[in-house]
Structure formats: C-alpha cells, structure tokens
Length: 178
Image 1 (cartoon, one colour):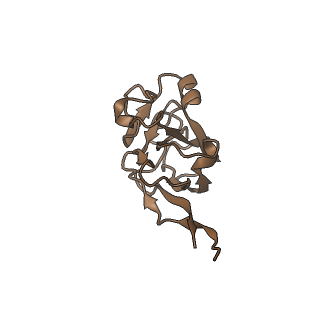
Image 2 (tube, rainbow, N blue to C red; image 1 turned 90 degrees about the vertical axis):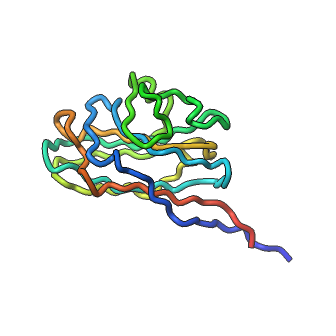
C-alpha cells in the first residue's frame, strides 16, 4: 500500500543570544555577533527555518540597517578545527562578538539570510519571519552552520541593540513517510 511523503517540522530551538544583547553598532558592518554552531551532521535535516526578534537600543538611535548572515563549515570539518577562518578572533561557531578584518572577507564567506532598514525609533522591535537556511546555500544545508549579525543602528559604536529582548530560533524541517 502506497503512503505519502509529508513535511515534518521539529520543535523550535532557541539560540543562545547573551552576547547579542547590547551589540555595538558597526558603521562598516565588519563588527558583529556570531551564534554558536549547529551540527546538522547527525540529524541531517533538509532545511532550518530561522526567525528572530531584534529590539533596538533606547539611545543614540539613527536610521540604519540590520543584517543576518549564515555561514557553514568546509566539508565535514568542525568549526573548532579552524575552518573556515573568517573572523579575526577565530571564533567561528562560538557564540559571541566576531569581527572581520575586511568587508571583502565578509562578502566572500557569508550568505545573506535577511536584512532590514530600521527607523530611529528607540526600543523598536523588528521581526525576522521564518527564513530558509537551505535556500541561502543553493538548496542544501551545510554539515555545520552558524549565524552572524551586524548593524549600524546607532550614531557611534555604542550599543545598537537593547540589553534584552532580542531572540533567534530555528525549526528543523525534513520529510517523513506515512
């Protein structure tokens, strides 16, 4: 007897964003925050739907942009092995601040997932709708992946994101046979 192949959405996982809170503004978009790495080598999900909320800081606000990028490892080498070597601090796949040495390295090593233009309104909440990770990588999810976020929401290098309120989650997706 024939069955159906249906999408199967797994429960959402909240990413650790401790160091995203209070993230300083980067006028050249080379300074930012990286998430911890997600290992897809075991579960082998076909896609991840990434979503989030970002709360702007209450002071020094300006009209600016916020960018959410994704990056992956090379082959099946873990981030801890140093590949790819994107950030000047060599913190790929580790939650925290991460800076590129040049815009060209950011553009070459990352895939843009989502961007938005913010108003100068203090403490504004911006919502990133569920966005396909696989689509950013040509239809395939890397063995390991992580996110990198940057913005220029303040007039200086002060905190552009509020010290609380921002969050990011992902929903793994695969097919199941019924």
